Length: 258
Image (cartoon, rainbow, N blue to C red):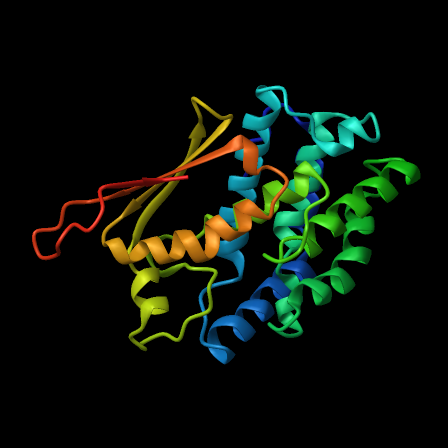
């Protein structure tokens, strides 16, 4: 597996990704996490595909925020650069679910155990010792704060929390549901056709969600809305949800935004 991201001249991020793509232990841990999630718990993918989607979404949102003048906390608190914030959100995105290789329950805490030594090893020869401590702390905070109920203390953590939630299209819900069981969880998980992130008008970031069925609103309300409202970037993100006209289903709503 190879993680591909748009570097946009960020040499440190490129070095980080090079190390990650050569890390066979990390790749196996992602596979182990997915065995626990999919094969043993019967929930949606939390492995390689999920981290690719999340890392790309996080990086795109962070860049949109930075372009609009929003300072990441690693800049405002530590006088580092936007490029370092990119390293933080990418590492956090790639490592946030790795604890599922231990157990799905409280996996955020398990992820910290595995992530700490891994982050330090990845950052060596790229950052100074002091910078490594800062970035490691910021990544660890983002990982623990991606839990929907946990408060985000940084912009970077908020970006990860929302990026994690946008992986919801075509049955990829982050809300656990049993495959084959018919209920609001499983039905709504199949109702999201696509999710797109782009530059907003009223706010720096716009998330466009296309639904095949109005039942998909459950995914937006119970997943994305809750995570966004408890993130540090809620004032910078606009969400627009549209339902497609389906001749076999009554169109309950046309547009829903918050």
